[in-house]
Picture: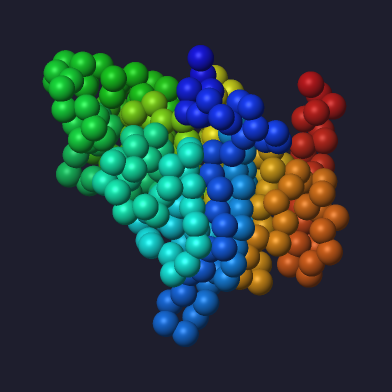
Length: 278
């Protein structure tokens, strides 16, 4: 049984239509006079990689933080893996935490801990019964899974390159074998080769582990190479959430400028060339 299958409720297998890992309805986020989201709806399907894009100030990270429970929205409903994320019950919050992994933009690693110790943090919090030996073994496994060399386990974040720190953050995000993974600008700051390698890693892990991935990005290559659907944030909500061919045709000024500019055409051309080589 895959992680994605295991997280579904029995009723979900009988329901019509795609099964949902995340369901957001009527979301409102406001900071003083500034309304970031107003009546925002979003579905994330089980087993997909959903790319989330939008212009500056559209609240991509705010949306992610709301789903994760790091910010309580001003209105709306959020369901994560069938659990009411806004219930306020400690048990519900714990269940969501144990089943989600998060990679923030800068990795958000503890600077005074080694990579291995960083990966062990969620294991200590959620599996205190594990022995030190087993925690170290599991941390080493996640480090390898994230594509890092074994000797990276004993290094501090400051001793790693930017790309390696992202992989270390990914290893920690995978520590609890979560079925749901959140990635905030995972390829930002990486060179094109490093970004492509990271994209390939995410797609490989998603297929191998049955992950559902919520991926905030500005990287058009990422969108075209690994995302199953793309959700566009604009006008305080999600204006379209669909496969890329449908998104490209969506009649909105930001969408047309973003997906039909020079960088988008280069990304489309690169993916066409890769498909032809395959």
